[in-house]
Image 1: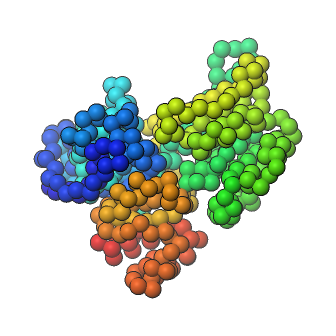
Image 2: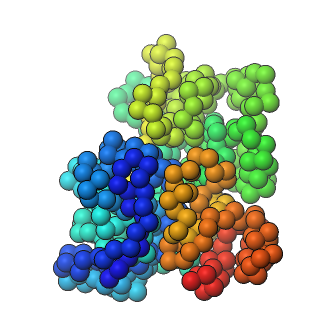
Image 3: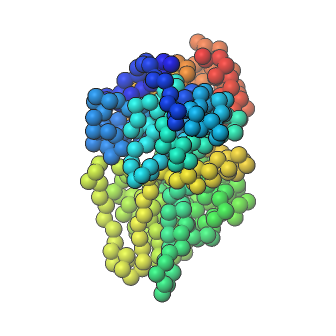
Length: 418
């Protein structure tokens, strides 16, 4: 079977190509990818090439398919897995396989599996590690967003707090505590806010900062203070770019006690130092935003590390439990990651979008891999409709859903943009 896929050959060398997939072996599965959302991690992989820890050193000779936030449908199952998977099943994947200690992952390390493809071969280790999950949701894009949401859940679960006089830690954020999310209004930050006010271990005070007034306005409309209040969370959005003394303002929400949990959602030295300064006793600073600079550093107060038990954690991805929790909360309507999506595109838009991702404003860029469509902001559908009436219909569907991408919009897209 032929597939079209975006393959990485080296630093900034992405190519959309059509090639033949080999026949599947008894321990493999053939699948069709329907949706894949583009992650900043794919940009980092494309920029670093073989210097990236998950990219093979011989990628110039044996290219890999990029993309790891994928959802699709199974087409053919090898004999080994016939009892567990069937053709026609929808699926999503946990790319952090951790197979026998290896860093290899779909979307980084394999020649025949990645989200930026029409068809893929799922290798044995994905099933062996339990990383191929059946997805029963109506819309494929929710299956794609389960993986980035699982990264957020993993970060929340990785935070820890000490127990005075004992040598073990309480895992997770402090329930009923003070939490700050700095630079928190990108797509992942919005997902973190949504999870924080809807999970079963909520903070009492949640302060979210940004310096972009447009992002602040959109966040206030999508995840309201009133909704957070109903769930027992006192939510504050703060534009720190307009403050002479951001530290004083942030500390005022906690009556000077500081924060139990601080999340950094942008790799900026000043943010790390700001987060350090607002930590309370036993405060945990989670550096969520992975930098591309391997020598990235920030100052940290080690006096407080010693005497106030402040500490730092960082995670890269979630685990299988995080992915399952993400899917479960979405299926029950407790979280809605559609707030993360601001652009829709086809497979033909992946190369340029991935290589220029930091310079494209907005949130998640959602790709439907079996259509051709230039990357298009959702809020420009009406404008595009002047030349293509299909966008006028898409715009109406989205407007009726509070401006958010939805299952009905996906269905219309897949039926009309093939």
